[in-house]
Image: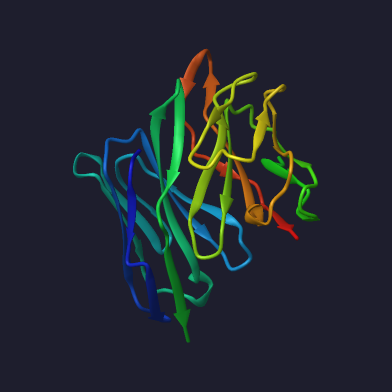
Length: 111
Length: 118
């Protein structure tokens, strides 16, 4: 099956710093999403981005499908950005689409 | 708009007991998924469904069964619970038809069910 690798696995930032999270995938995908899992375990949709660039406030994402990677940018980080960031790719399987998650990046933002 | 709702939120089972987790979505989505998340790990796909009456195996299907009798519901069953099934379970849904045409949609997740098997 498809492999989805995220880097870095862990990241500690001072509040106000910027960061880039990367997601590499091993095969062609139909779609790609970024999620934030907050400290309470909720999975929050950040971006639905099969290709191109999108921005939402301090967050933006870019997917280059032909080169099989996606980037999530966090600017002016805040303590509320802490948690785990997952990318998930959608691939064709068994007559439908299957969503496969990456390994995640654990982010901690400190004061 | 409730989105994806999971029932129950917490449960403790004894080894060998059975239970069913319910997932309900109100977005008229075709696809539904069950995942498990273990400490420090990502989400692993257990089973999924691409439409009412269909089910398929994911990465870690052993010890679980599923049913999709109604489009809006996806049930996950544990016939004989084992301590290795202690985990947080997430349900998700995606993909819809609009004006007779398929439309990819982002996946939405429920709030999770924390299951402990002792």
